[in-house]
Length: 235
Image (cartoon, rainbow, N blue to C red; front, top):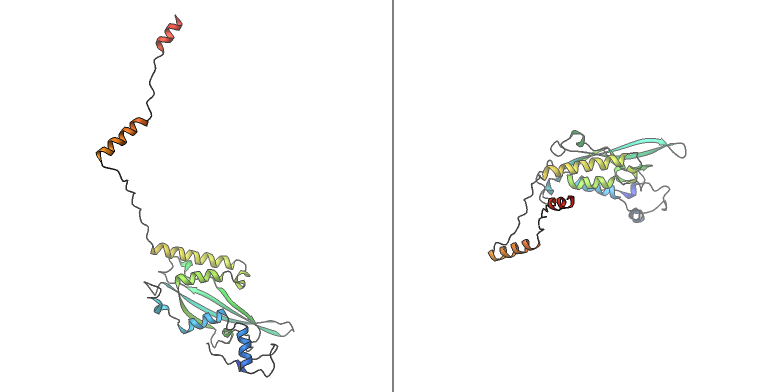
């Protein structure tokens, strides 16, 4: 997947001479930042599609349930081009699947289908992403659950997803729901202990505190009998 023959790709319409050699093509390819971030991510996942080897590195207690299975699908459609002739439109979709133990609710076990990248044009062009030339349109791999949910939320801010009505909201809602439930299941609630009141047990200190309390405590209101004074006034 990560091997590419730059000399076999077309450079029509690009700012390169028609007889550009490999060095010129490679310099232009690197200047564009290619392979891009999506291609590099897919290359790394194709090399290690199973995250079991990260068990000790990430301290994963249950490698089978503490991961998601990602399915990436490439779809190509013909759309009307600027010149009237059909133009290729490539779209790369991703959907994540969770096990029953990792996601308690059935609606959490499958993520919304999101878009990783789009490309318009011939896949044999030098500037075409690597995934447009996949031999098979489907790829599958695992990702650690917690880190993938953070990545999924970050993907919700990508223009290809924000341009779809309501998709970014669905992405953040799904990822937040799964993450909160996952934490709640693994971190059990505990009852906090009552704070212990530290008291001075010295007899002398107790007597001193009692004297201070008696000195400043509020005195009770005395009841005054006004009946005799009222009787004298009446006489």
